[in-house]
Amino acid sequence: MGRRSALVVSTWPLGPEARLDLAASSGSQTGPMTTSLTSWAGAPAGASPASATDPCVHCGFCLPSCASYRVLGTEMDSPRGRIHALKAIAAGELQLDATVASHFDSCLGCLACVTACPSGVRYDQLLDATRPQLNAAGLRSPQLTGFRRLLFALLPYPERLRALLTPLRAYAGSGLQALVRRSGLLRLFGPQLEAMERLLPALPSEAFQDSWPPLVPAQGPRRYRVGLVLGCVQRLFDPAVNAAAVRVLSANGIELVIPPTQGCCGAVTHHQGELEQTRALATALLASFQSVVGEGKPAGPESLDAVLVCASGCGHTLKLYGQILAAASQPPNQQFSAAAAQPQTPQAGQDDYLPFAAPVADIQEFLEQVGLSASFQARLQPLAHADGSLASAQRPLQVAYHDACHMLHGQGLQQQPRSLLRRIPHLQIREAVEAGVCCGSAGIYNLVQPEEAAELGRLKVADLGGTGAALVASANIGCSLQIRRHMEDRPEPLPVLHPIQLLDQSSGENSGENCGTGRHNSANKSPASNSPAVNS
Image 1 (tube, rainbow, N blue to C red):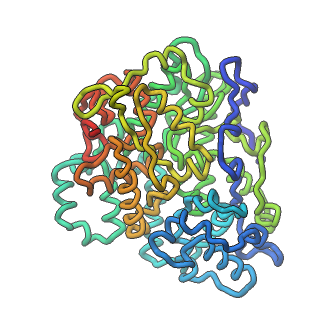
Image 2: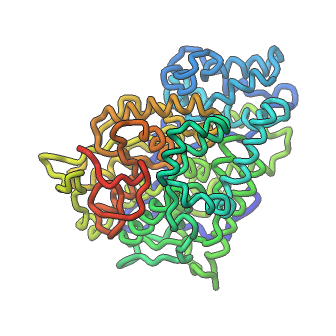
Image 3: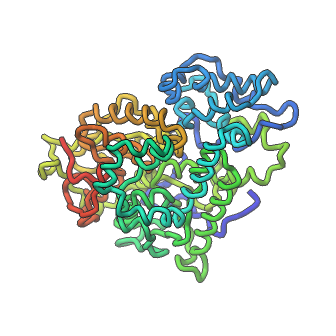
């Protein structure tokens, strides 16, 4: 990578309690994510994405899994159609104009087709190689280009978002907001701004400050020492998730390092092909950790065992930091080659794949791998039904688990979150019929493609609601906001909570905080995100 982190890589394995093998815990059929951040447009003769598209036999297995094909129904808006277009562009038979670009913009980047493909086509690599080219001038309308620039100037920067949202605190989650939404007045501002407002939740005071110290001690004997990435959108729109994560980790004997100056990980720009901004955000996040870990620094000199994150979209990008930063040092004429288009498996200890000098893991992935502490497990109690009675063997609390695309398809994590939830006594997981289909959030997709995203949101909410569950567990902030937004249209909307919040509540660590199951009360309630009770 050319740059080494100041952090020191941990010794493997991590002691007698658990062998922390995060790569092995991923069940993805495609192996560790190694998406190539390369460019094929303007590359020398003979450098094309053909080697990655060749395995496609046009069998159509990808079509039922493709979210854009589900709502648009056109071949060009499917993985198979887009691969055909890439082959035609590489052969000089088709130009990447505004019409062709629109069919790539309709792609959510959910990666469901990668999981579904029996031929092993790495559509994820093709998409990441293509998206930077879609940002060229003239391929999108001036209005859409300006709106995207606005999003990229706001969403990755928590302090800018806080400044923008401060005047809206009284409006968000209020009766006035509900009245404005019912009136249809928002349609006058255009579909993009209407979609943005419909995702706006109530804004608690915790959203406007990061109060964590650089070092949060473990309760009892320290088992591990980890860094925690707070995220940008999550810390504003759902700060209770990070609060629950800190409590649960500390209660499990895990010391936390939380850099107070940390910003966005770059996921929102990475997933849209904005490579330079992504690298700048990634570099800044790494620097924030280096500023607190080391001799004479606030968090002390000891190395980290892992860097954790509570949002799957962020985790997907963080696990690719080695490639994202390494791509910047490659000469332009070497940024796409036949070899670069093939899946590569990083080996443990390679600095290019460990920019943090510690493995990146989703919090559920990590806790399932190292195990809950005996004392924490002993404290887990049944959660409550809407009527206040505790869940029991005769009447379990039913939870629909939502598989976020960048968790399921991007990181191959499916069983780990379910396994953790099953540690809660008398909690029963109900599976959606189409768990692998995208909810329509997809980063900024539900803002820039609001009509298609809304249809996918309605389909997802109907699927989750059809499980008969009392609440929904979602481990990605974008998905949670999208599902909550469309739950509002149901007669009895289900609460949407992060699995770590349910684990936190079951342990009794979140005294006084309402997680939506009726066990605790809180003054901070938003229309669909923190319902006072669940129905079962």
